[in-house]
Amino acid sequence: MEWYPRHRRDLPWRHTRDPYAIWLSEVILQQTRVKQGMPYYLDFVTTYPTVHDLAAAPEDEVLRHWQGLGYYSRARNMHHTAQQVVREYGGVFPGAYAELLKLRGVGQYTAAAIASFAFGEKVAVLDGNVYRVLARVFGIASDIAAPATRKEFQALADTLIPATAPAEFNQAIMEFGAIQCPPRKPDCLFCPMQHQCFAFQHGMVQELPVKSKAKASRTRYFHYLVLRYGDTVYMKKRGPKDIWQGLYDFALTETDAAELPAVALVDAVEALGGQLATNRAEEPVQALRHVLSHQKVEARFHSLWLQQPLPVSLAQAADLAAFTPSETNNLPKPVLIANFLDKPWK
Ligand code: SF4
Image 1 (tube, protein in one colour):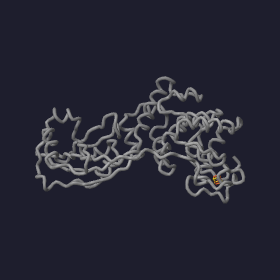
Image 2 (tube, protein in one colour):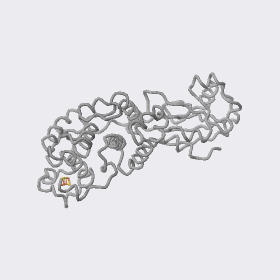
Image 3 (tube, protein in one colour):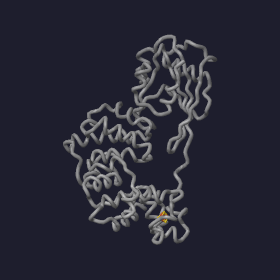
Image 4 (cartoon, protein in one colour):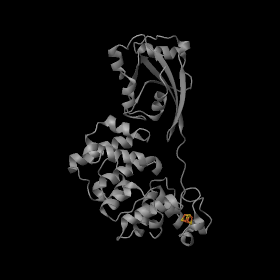
């Protein structure tokens, strides 16, 4: 806590005790670096200055503002939570850790952050930075990826946090982990904790914390049928139970291999009642790769021009609708799709 005032970064969410703004910053910064998250935070507090504004916004619009941050369930949960706060709490965030935990998408970390930063409650936060600092300083070799380990670290953090300045303690230990004691190349040489740090004293800085490997990622092959008629393109909103829920992409055929036989492509178009205006040989294909946390998407975009619009009933049955370029611009999309559409239409 002596180190913190001298080294902390000046971040906009540290100038407020508004639980709504703090909650926004915490949701945005989960699995996102500060530099990447900052413009999103500023955009959200400007576009939706109060929880009422966010709750009243259409989901598509919220997802559009979120575009590029990934982990879109966070945005949907955030939107839902804003509505919950308005509906059940009259637009006032609950002021206690236990109550905050009842909000959707608000886990122990976020509840602790809001409770301490906004309301001064003595509850210790545990994020990746805190785990790392505690594991190194106290020499704890438990696997931080194992859920059971949380109790052990929480108990330790609870003994350290002072009743007089819980918010500052939480901020300080997280910032210390981010700046002084990052995963790679911690600045041990100039570290004020050097003499107390188990990892430094025992030459175990690189071994701690212990974290078991995440499960191997799998590769998925997406073949997008980018059906175009005039200056419109057919897009669909993705359903639940898969990546990118609620975002827009194109008619999709998923296979186990990078190649899609020509006949399968033609069959897929015909199943939608479409007739191609160009022959197969002229059709441009673009390939893009997108890496997610547990899967890699190899996407091929087959741009196909139609002789006439798709029959309405078949298009509707496949959840497809035609959009102009400016309309597609306003739809929330996975970055992969946005990158594809950014290229000039042929
Ligand atoms: S001595 Fe090194 S490992 Fe220990 S707390 Fe300081 S920076 Fe982290």
